[in-house]
Length: 186
Image 1 (tube, one colour):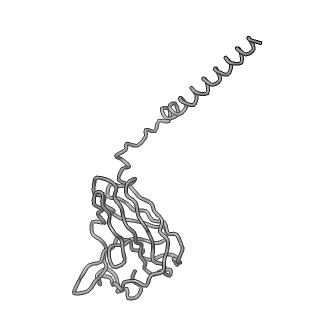
Image 2 (tube, rainbow, N blue to C red):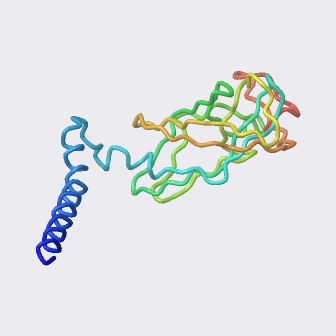
Image 3 (cartoon, helix red, strand yellow):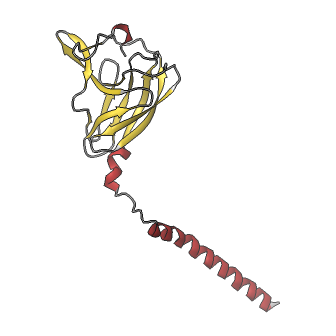
């Protein structure tokens, strides 16, 4: 009986040791043999620390311009520049509102949006925004629209925005860029 208990204890101890070594060593061996090094923390730091807070897009019919809004939040110690953006819903441009000849107009934002270190940058009606130039289909209230921000350093940040009804701020385009928007403005 004593030999049987000793044999059972040794067998259990051996099994637990084997399982423990396999669990501890399996991850290291897989990573070492993968041939793909992990990205350096600095390589993805900007994209990982740029977020979009409270994103939304103005609902609208197919073919008519609309815009996306929210707050870009930079959690890093360096400025981040959004150079461009895209969406499967529509061709996109980064836009700003500015005064020209005594009236507010919207135009492409030269140089992109700069989000200061540890700061934020608001995208809002009557201000900077992501302009959906010609949505292929209607964007209905409640729809979720996907976006990708392209940073100046080549990284990307994906986010989704919920469509909401919004009457607009009656902005118009720079005549050299597009025809006046009238009531279809974001």
